[in-house]
Image (tube, rainbow, N blue to C red):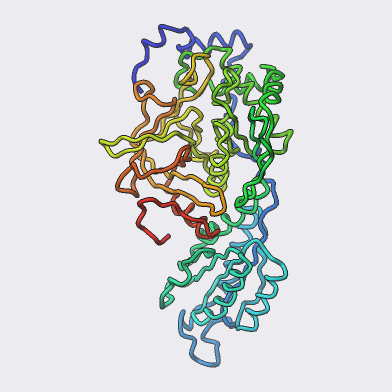
Amino acid sequence: MQNDSHLKKKCNCCNRREFLKTSSLVLGYTGASLLIPPLTAKAATFNIRKKQGANVRAAFLYPPSKTFADNPDGWWSWPGNDFDAEGRQRKYNDAIRKMEKSLGMRIKTENSSIANSEDAQRLAKELEASQPDGLLLIMFYNRSLGEADLLLETAKKLNMPVVFFIGLGVKHGSIEHYRRPGVYFIQSLDNLKAIEYGMRMINAKKRIAQSTILSITDDKSARNAQDKFLGTNIRAISHARYADVFNSVSVSGTVQETMKTITNKATEIRHVTKVALENAMRAHFALEKLLNDENADGVAMNCLRLGMLKPCISFSILNNKLIPAACENDIPAACTQILGQMLTQRPGFQHNPCYETEKNHYYASHCTCPTKVYGPDGPELKYLLRPYAHSNEGSCAIQVFWEPEDTVTMVRYYPGEKPALDVYSGRVVKSHQMPPAGGCTTNVEIKITDREDACMVKGHHNLLFCGNLARRFRLFAQLYKMELANTGYDNVYI
């Protein structure tokens, strides 16, 4: 970062060491309090993880025989006479039990396999009767494709997502037929991670449909609503109620400790008064109380003209803990955040777009950037504390510095009769100081790597996730038959 010593001369609070010394005296901190662990270390308070998990039916497709060499017909074709399908099934069943526990869902399997069309028809009737949240097909034999096709057609009629896995290094013939909406098709040797991600997508959709996002607004016409595709409930509450809870928060105990943790980790505190920090903490604990009182999973707020009630720091902390928080009451952005967090276990950075035409780059800027972009248990990005960038009331916001060369994925969810995802891949160039870059406090310059022109990026308040994650989002869109608003994106296969 550039040297900002000239700014520190204008305000005693800009000197971090002096600020911490002064605040320790005023608020009664001791030296031991410097060892308080980060508030964002775990994501245990994420309510959506406590929702009911998905129920998936799993089936293995192959003829019953310990090894293919035991078949009296003497001709088994692929995968070869020494392939132990039943042993493979036991191995995969053990892995599936671990997936169930890890993801908090139910994956029903049987010891026997789907060996013929009669077995497939029986399972098809079971699917029609039980209506599970998804179907997992694991095939170990080339000639089981007929049974697979019957079950895939049943799932299509039931509008049921299918993860179809062929666990062979070789399966001759075209697979284009299976790379279609409603199906996550995997042909890969012992790729249990791919199966697990298929289960994660189905589980995410199930739990998101049970989630609630608080919409804090002064719009008296605001009503409770539900996103038709994701199923997320939107619950409107007033600014007045938020303000009442905000004013009831006492800056003592845990509030003090949290403030100390945040200031202790900041590389600099620039023009932020003690009162502004206290109000930032009041906002955070008020939002946590409202989330708990309403049994809600995330929050969006009309926040631009709230003065010292602005929740910039709180939104950063909440997203660090994988509790979705969206600025300016942007509900589609909140839905993008909740979807991205469930699919990637990382928080996204909701931002305003801008373009660098001469370098063919993209700028992402806003005032609520999370610091735990690698996930709640990952390392934390460097950050400083400073006032909100667009007013003079002195409230506290955060400026976060992304690591150059990190890969990133940008996503926007568009609700409606035909829900869509817009997905982009990129790489961090640098994080800019503000000023001179302008915009909001955090300003990240991105090279878009899957489009020839950065100006192809569409949308406002897109979510920026750290990591090469674009395929994960596109797979979700395919599995749930969403449109992909891939302006300028040429790769049709995912």
